Each structure stands twice: as structure tokens, then as C-alpha cells.
Length: 71
Image 1 (spheres, one colour):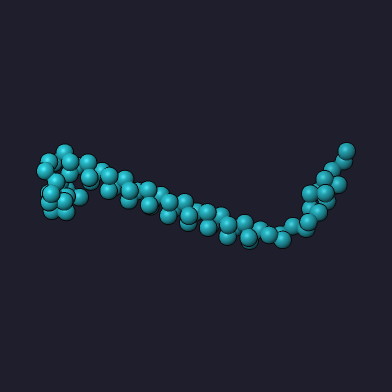
Image 2: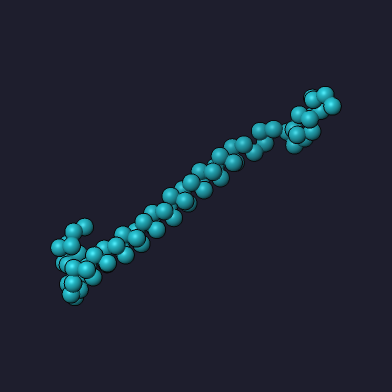
């Protein structure tokens, strides 16, 4: 977004400095929303992967594995 485009969005804004501040604030908010969406997608993907691994090994797998080693 350019300063001129911002001026058409916020016609009551009196200075280019103020317009720049508004652009930065809006961009910051948009980035926070996007970051939260990415975080949610990644957590959903991890949860899906976790569910795929459920039941892959027997409940006593750890004990079985340890019993294979000489003490």
C-alpha cells in the first residue's frame, strides 16, 4: 500500500507521517492474524501425525525393548 492509497482510505488523516503509522499498525495486525493461523495449522498437523502413531507399538514396548539388552 502506498501513502496515496492510505490517504484515500483515511481521508481525515492530516499528515503523511500519521498515514504511515496507520499503514504500519494495519500491517502489524494482519501479520499477527496470519501468524496465529499458521500456528493453528501446524498444531493441527502435529495432532494428526500424533493420531497416526497411536497403537503403532504394543503397550509394553518399552519393557520388551529393554529386555532385549544384556544387563
